[in-house]
Image 1: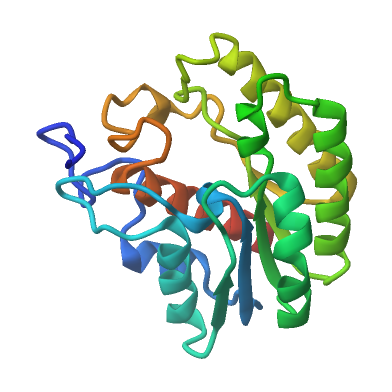
Image 2: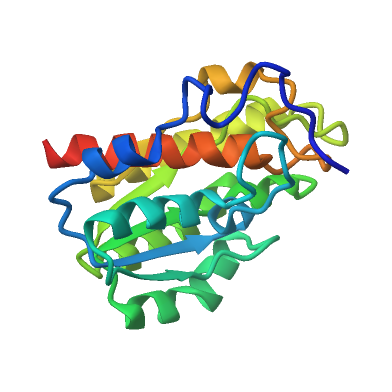
Length: 223
């Protein structure tokens, strides 16, 4: 099933999407040569297609822009659909650390929200261990907050759950000097086509916006 995109909007006309030449320009002089991503389906870039947008995960888009600056940049993405914070810690961090990234994105904790009663204290403890190990690589760290577009009928309090995990993420970001790409109140949340048919993952249009926001955030660190 294909996600419907607003008739007049394409990747080329989307105000939140960076043209490839502009993305490369913003990253000119970037020092990163080993880019890694770990975590859940948001990290993996899972999602359906959108008319008018290349069907590419956000991470691949960022890699494309970085390789305009450094063609030899290497990339590892261990993001896994359904991974909890504990899964990220136990099953992905050893490989990430061994890879030796100098730029590392972490997205974890979202799947912990699907428990009947999330234990946010436990999630925070585990996520802290994830970010401790990530910080130990010496890499520039980035992460997302979750957007307000996500609604899960089985959990009427899901927006409150999202706020809680975002608060954890923001606290850890301060503690470990993580660049935050804040999607909670981003204008893209109001788009009816933002989510894929499963109503959980970003569509290709959302992936394109995520990539542009990551590039903007990285460019800000280079100033």
